[in-house]
Image (cartoon, rainbow, N blue to C red; front, side):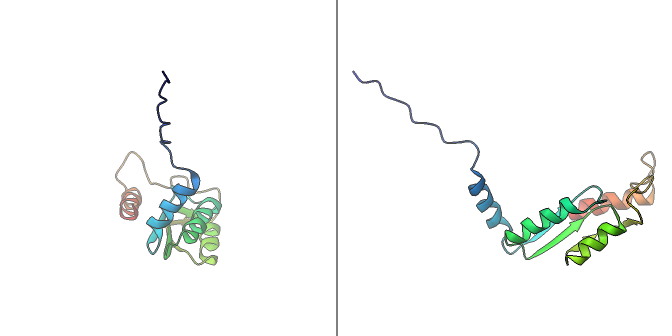
Length: 119
């Protein structure tokens, strides 16, 4: 008597091309919002913005609570919208970019509100 073989289970994870196609369908004609906690050097968010454009996003917005002036300039040069309430002048950053973590300072509350609105 021949032994029956069980069918191979389908992969639990889609292939890269299937995942890319699915994401492309979800982004086509929509606004893509890329959120990062702090944009000191913008290469990561710019790479994500480029991929979102390639997947058909009609507009790309980069949002962060704090970023450097150089990062804002590079994002603007590539014609992406940049939402950032706290721009610092150099890459060393702000000593307390999110405000006083122990208190309810206006800067901290503003960054929390912006993060929630962007999400």
